[in-house]
Amino acid sequence: TDMPMKEDKIKVIRKDYGKCKEGTEVVLYVIETGGHVWPGVTIGPAFLGVSTKNIAANEIMWEFFQKHPLK
Image (cartoon, rainbow, N blue to C red; front, side, top):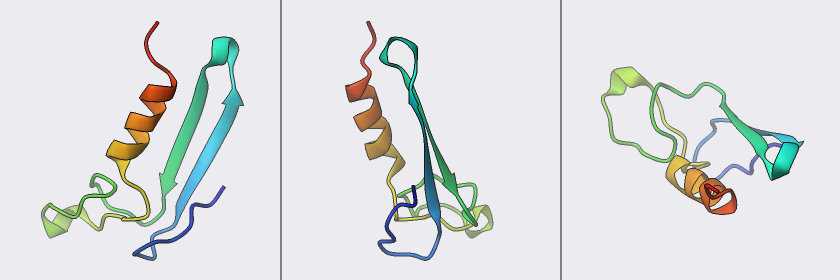
């Protein structure tokens, strides 16, 4: 599903691969035309490219690991 745009025009696509064995799941974010930077952070040298503010990688990872704690 496409994520709604917030502050920039970089397209972010989220791909869910459903529920897998024992409640596991795979979620992939594709950031089109983004640079080699951390999503949600704008700090870094210009030669690394642009960063999106449509998602924040730290928040997404935290939510994912809260949902799927180590057993």
